[in-house]
Length: 145
Image 1 (cartoon, rainbow, N blue to C red):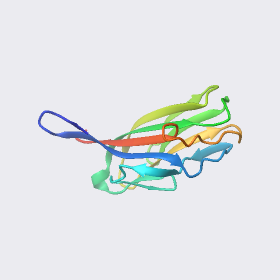
Image 2 (image 1 turned 180 degrees about the vertical axis):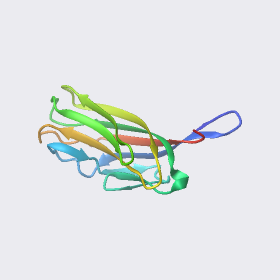
Image 3 (image 1 turned 180 degrees about the horizontal axis):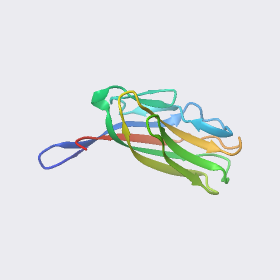
């Protein structure tokens, strides 16, 4: 949590998740279904890999960070994205010949809007690496922005 000298809160760590309940290898796009959460006492709810802005008090600007690695070595058709239901794809990255990457987005969430963290593989040989530091997401809401 950060404060100005007058104690105005400018952001709060709101949500952190790691481990996926759907870590199996899949060819094509897959939304990560997060299985272990902490700091989940926010206005964002999580179900089936989808985070929803629960109410108008929770609406605002968010910074979302998503880290992903996979097993069975590097390959060329490996992508990450963060998708916002109100804005579409906020960020999209291709990792060429790698086995891990991360992506971040600064986005607005209105009440009822959702976002997901997705991964794409060009074949079904690469399961998610489920280590806490290997598969992780965080979202912060910025206040007074």
